[in-house]
Length: 146
Image (cartoon, rainbow, N blue to C red; front, side, top):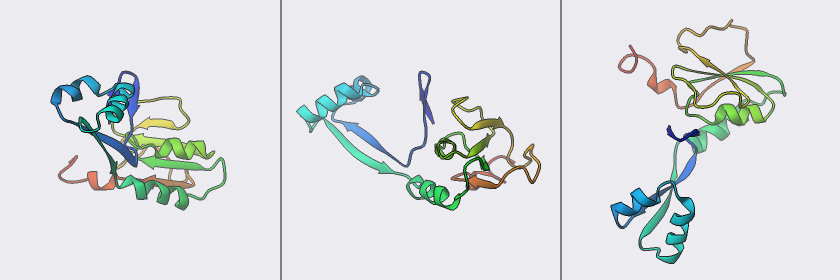
């Protein structure tokens, strides 16, 4: 996850990727969306925009449908630092606890963020109505953390 100033960039399901005819344009235009779009419209050969889809284009809608819970239900989201899923679940009225090993880029935006190891979570086994783990499980275990 990249952070520009105080604004985190989450791993969204889809985003635009820009390539430029000259490397100096990348240095100049990255972070300046208005100028980049103006240049793209005026001289389309200098800037190329393509849509990048990630696995989250499938995972997040699947998780949202699978967690068909009444408002106020408690959901544990494991490995949630770069994921927008806790924000989406909170917006649906669920009480979300997001857990990760790394500090979170935002606080007080709906979910409760807990800095913890998901292999030994600091919660009672009956504390949640559901749990989610999106694009995280493959990063846990021998070869990655142990």
